[in-house]
Length: 221
Image 1 (cartoon, rainbow, N blue to C red):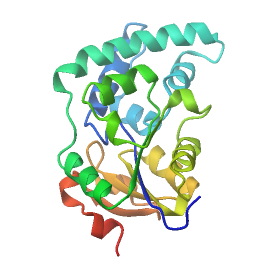
Image 2 (cartoon, rainbow, N blue to C red; image 1 turned 90 degrees about the horizontal axis):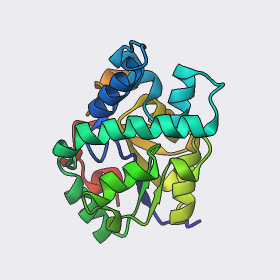
Image 3 (tube, rainbow, N blue to C red; image 1 turned 30 degrees about the vertical axis):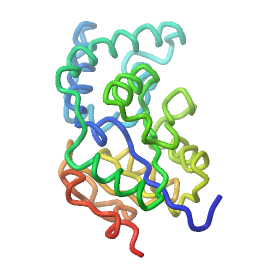
């Protein structure tokens, strides 16, 4: 691990793309078909950053076999992609920020709870994968957020110490995962207001989108 190398580590859903309402809507539609009524706000606050298999078992039972969970998760993801595809785009200012970062030699990583299919749908669908030094998803770690595994693996693959990483997140569970990883965090209020993150001591900036951020501000010379 380098003492001087730095990295930006991006959550994907709700951060690179403003899509969390579509994820929540697709989960609610998925569960409604099975006779379960879900409160949207509470659902987001308690599940954003968790892996699909964790959410399905939490709401439908730990007794489900792995292949049953996989089939249910694939069904939910197909609902999500159908809802979100016409709206797929990056959050304002994202492209400019990563261009600045690359010019300054900052490593770039994605660390997400998304499945490989959704990573392909978002990153490849928007031709973004080529910008990143590594992409870590649900298939790469056993535990979702708030566990720090996904962020620590991204830092390791970039060869950057956790304390030299800045995480970009939109959900409390993700900010907590960054805190446990020993990483500072920038919060985007694409989904929740700033007040939702008041308890976290690792949050260094809160912004509505990436246009409010600069490399000099985040990594002072």
